[in-house]
Image (cartoon, rainbow, N blue to C red; front, side, top):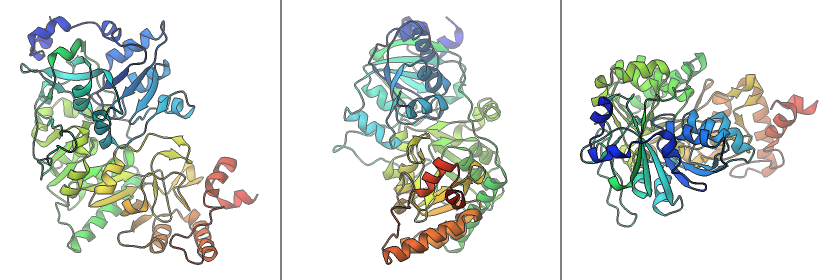
Length: 506
């Protein structure tokens, strides 16, 4: 046996369970519900799913796949394209499976990420026949040490009938000790989660399992797929500066200090760029309490701005992967990975007073946000944890560019085509045009701030025209709308490839 494998396999009686990926894949049957580790292309199962892809070339079978969030190409691209996935949840981010969802070939259960563990406990998700779990080690006392994400793995491990471990020896051993695995009890018998500070550790360094559940161990050296975020551009930097000025004003108003409150930043290029903007700011001793630690978090640790960062996953570009995982000891005492039902837990978000920064696809003149469906019908990625945070945060902030497709699409519309976050959960909106602070405002007070401060100049007049006519038509209702026209911008886009009104008249 390889010395590195032997070193990481603390329970020696498990050595007999080491098999090939093909042998492990053969354990899974048609119709099985399969849990997989992984959250935003990190810590996901890789070699067994690819063995399932090979098996599908000669055998027809389908499985339901539940994870923490999106996975790398092994599952959401290749396994989906092989026709193996019948149902997928609770989040995805790959174009291949997205297209299959939008053609009806894959069923998709989009869900708040903090809710999934409860669905497992209640038996709504399940019974889970197999969990495929990537690990960096199994300790002598039987703890499975995840790699660089935790996600739903602890609750899956509790309820899965069987476990397949992918022991990935390419991940650094320095990952051992950065996890904080705490699993709440059953509802109705549950104690308060004993955390009053994001820097506290309240659980174990690994996932407790009955060793008898482990049916196979597959050795892996496959790295995580790198993050797909792109570097900040001029507009995202402008948005970052606008938000930093807003925080400075909050300090002057006595609502925040230079340490702010724990920061949560959603997945993606815009949110990452906004967080990156803190590097040259007045703020210091920041704490991050988020879902995912992206490049910006480690840049801020290096800049001395962030003193601690907790999440459920680490998702990095190829450049940052080399930098961070090649020197993980430097960061180990400053980071912590928790189950997603803890990182995203409403009780903790409210208690710790998080500042939440997430991305919108579109928003309307009253502050309702669509973060999932293109033109109301086509799934993009999913709601993820944005709802967990926005509804319960001290400050629920949404960022987006004011336009898309070269200006053919306005990100601000009369009425969103799909609602993920109601106006009640949206405190602040930021685009490259400006900021709208909606706190404490009635619907008609929000309209001028959103149109004048956040909408693209090409669409301001069109938005005002709609709103003024809606106000006149309804006689001043609480939330004025012309129902016959409320979604006409999306209809125009479908017909004429633009939301601009003059094309609709042509």
